Image (cartoon, rainbow, N blue to C red; front, side, top):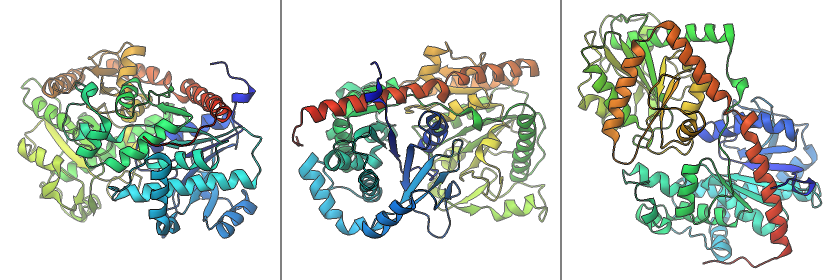
Length: 562
C-alpha cells in the first residue's frame, strides 16, 4: 500500500506488560525495536507499562519529572490515574509512561459487564493473571485517552498499539472511547495455540480441525481467548510475528493478520571485536568454574559448552527433547570431548544455593559433588520439577566418567542471581552452540539472539525464526553454515533428538578455523534479520491502521456482539 502523509503517524502509543518489566520475549521485541522507531518518530513514540515497582525501582526505568509534568499532575490527581514519565534505559531511550492500576479493581465487575455488552468479551471464567492484565490494559487505554485530550491531538494521526492478549482490553477501550485513534493489535502467540501445544496436543497437524472457542473452553481459558479474539477482530490493523502464527490466528481467532511483523534485533546489543573476546573469555571462565564447583571435579578447558534457554515451557520450547538428545550423545562411544550443557530457564526458585556459593567463595572444599550436582539454585518444589525429574529418569550422574554433563540454571540471569552474577547476554558469548528444538515458537528470539552474538544455533521449522532462516537463508538441518533448521512436526520428537545429538557430536570434531567460519555465517544471517531491515513492516502496519480507521470513521457502525 502506498504510504502518504495521511497514513503517517504523528504519535504512537505502544502498550505491553513487558515495558520496563523484563519477563519474556516481548521485552526483547520492544526494547530492541525502540531505537529504530526513535529514528523515524523521535520522542513521538511513547511506551506504556505497568507500574508494579514498589519497594524497588525498575532497573530499566529512569524517571524524568521534566517530561509532561502538567499532564502527569493532571492525570494523577484529577483523573486518579497515577502515572510516572521517564526513559526506558535501552538503546534509543524512548519516553515511557508507567501507570498504576490498583484502583480499577474496585470497578472490575462494571468493566467486565461493559466489555460484555460492547464486545461480547466473556470474563466470567477469568482467574489469576486475567484480572491483573485487564485492569492494566484498561488503565493504559485511559492513559492514552487522557494524554490525547489534554494535548488536543484530535487533528493528529495517532496510533494506539497493544501487544498480546494481556493488553487486548486496551484495544477495545480505545475503539469505543476514542474512535479517532487508530488501533493496532499484535498477538505474539495465541493463548489457545500455546495451550494446545503445551498440553501435548497436536497443534499443526490438526490445526484446521480446531475451533478456538471450543478449545478455550476445554482448556479452561475462555476469558483470555475471548478478550484476545475480540481485540484481534476489532483492531484497525491486526498483526502477528510469523507465517506460522498467522495461520494459527486465522483459524483460532477468526481473523487473518493484515501484516506480518517479524521480530528483529538491535545491533547495539551485540559486542564486537576485542570487547566480544574479553566478554567471552570472562563468561567462559565463570561457566566452567560454576560447573566444576557443582559437579565436584575438574573439567577440561576445551569442553564444548552447549546451552538452551528461554521460558520454562517444557514441551513447547523442546526442553524435553534437548535432554533426550544429551542422553543419546552420552551413549556415543566415539565422543571424545567433554560436553557441558546448561539449561537456563527460570523456574520457581528460593534463591542461590548456599553450599555452591560457599564453594565459589572458597569457604568450602569442592572436591566432591554437591548433593544434587545438576542445579545452581534452590527450587521451591524440586520433587515436582520436570527438568530435574527428566534428568533423574535418564540416569545422568555428572560424574567424571560421563562425557556429557547437565547444569540446570533455574534463575533469571539479570546479573545478580547470586551464582553467575553476569547478565544472560554476557554468558551467551561463552557458548559454542545453542539448541532450541521448539515445538511451538511463534518467532524464536533465543536462536535469533544466539546468531546475532555469532553463536552457532539449532532451531526448528516450527519456530518463526527457523522457518524464516530456512526460507530466506537456505538453512538446512546441518550446522555447516552456522544455523541448523531441523524439520519438526507434532510426532517426530525422537528423530529431532537424534539429529541434535549428531549435530553436537559433529561440532565437537571441528577445528578452530571451521568453528570461526560457523560463527561468522551465523552472524551474517542474523544481520539480515535486524530492525534496520524489519522495522518497515511496522511502518506498513501503522499506515494500514490509519487507513482502516479512516474507512471505519467514514462508515460508522454500532459495536456488536456475536
